[in-house]
Image (cartoon, rainbow, N blue to C red):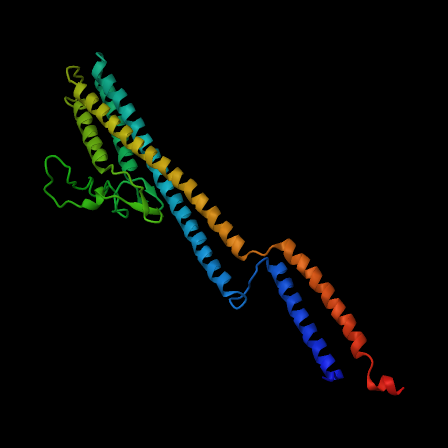
Length: 309
């Protein structure tokens, strides 16, 4: 077969074009750090990358959900810690009112004033919020547990005697947040009954302190103090429950970090370019391209005109 000048030119141009394309591809990989930048580069790698990317985003969302879980639990723990402190102070006041033989009317008035303030503080704790959600209102997160406008707690199914008005079960329902595939954690603390009982307890204490309007050291505070101790036990039990759920949330946090690391590692192995290998190939391809240019210049340069000179 006769090899013409045009065949040599076309071959050289084709090879130079192929070399340019390879250089361009390697340059793009080095610039972006990715093996592929469009689906046509490698559909399999792109599909796997989409899958790993979705996994990373899902883990990221679960981590955000876990942040909300911790926020709910920490805020509930703080509120119940405050409730315990209030009950302790109420116990001190009840003990003073019960044991002081020289209790005057002024003393009782002062105790009653402080008990009233403690009761109001306890009602505020019952309406503790995280963001715009009430923590202790069950699934009725847009409703306060203690209604200050109407001055009372909602009717509960556990009320004794049975309430006469309508019962809204949402106040004792659980709020759960998903923290992993098919794994949800309860974030609220069902404390409606506890706060309601404590409110009744304060009503009883106030009644005892203000029983006669005058000093009356014969009033028996023993039952009230015993009831305070019972409510303190309830508060401690609920705080222990929150602590247990916080521990589980911490375990889920560790698990999510492992899942995130594994997903990102797989995604990196799938789509990230081996920079050392890419740069080495770039240098090699550049050498080949320069050699092709040099050889092409030597082959194409002599033309018919050069022979006729």
